[in-house]
Length: 170
Image 1 (cartoon, rainbow, N blue to C red):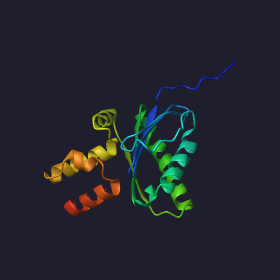
Image 2: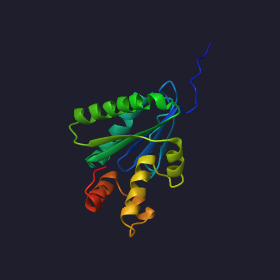
Image 3: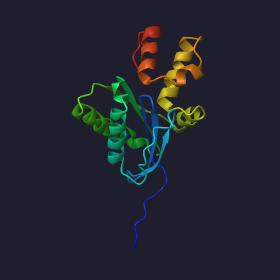
Image 4: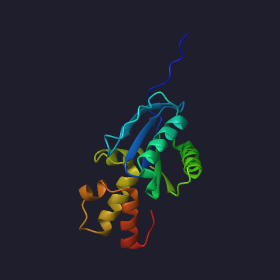
């Protein structure tokens, strides 16, 4: 008898540095799909892997390609079951933070929980919900920026702009 793993997405994890990655995970913590939101050449085949191995593989690639030199990272989550979103997000942040400490990197990790509606709005622009919300806020603060100009910037660059405009941190 074969055991089937559900291919239905139960929650979605976004990791934003630059590139931004969308990881769709089933209820058993196995990967359903991975989408590279702003860097198509950054491709890792992690389908049918568990979330822990997938995070390690993605972070290894980030380190190899120098993306962990960016000092800001946002990990965000959209879940079909909001009651456990905080726990899932904290678990993922802890795994990523452990990796970063082990590798001797210094990256500030911010965690955010988003709604399905925020996910859908961001998807229209091929962005993660967190990056979309930051850009949306920046566009309200400074009318000379455009979404097209901001969407390809790293989270670190967006954080610097936010800090310059308002004194706020991501």
